Length: 147
Image (cartoon, rainbow, N blue to C red; front, side, top):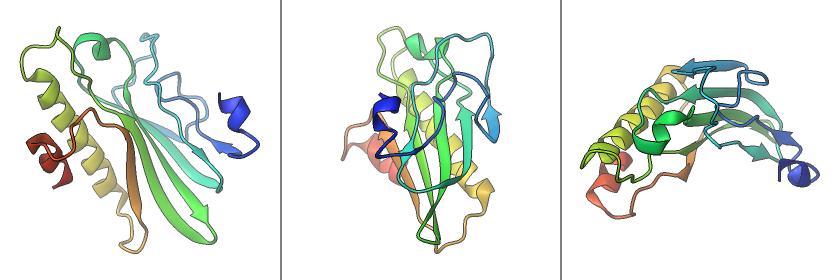
């Protein structure tokens, strides 16, 4: 897939959790022994000037066996910086105790918020968060994430 996209999106990150190669920094709870990646990567038409991966501290059910987290990139679009985070948050899983998956998603969003805060991104540089958040738009959980 990434190879097929290369001509249109020449700037690409590695896949989150597959390893540390290709990333300028890896933070969070990366474990080399985990053989399942987080499955997230970002492709861009614009030059990537910084790329980092962050592996979430917690997961339950099937999501606990991999290096699930988020990719962060800073791109230079026509001389202006933009910041993009791509993620796949904790999925609903019957193996998780009731409500645990929602609690984990909230903690994962807190990790994203803290990461952004620690970056001290100038107010005139936009930050975009995308991916599979595993949340229903308009739900109380969605509202909490938006705060």
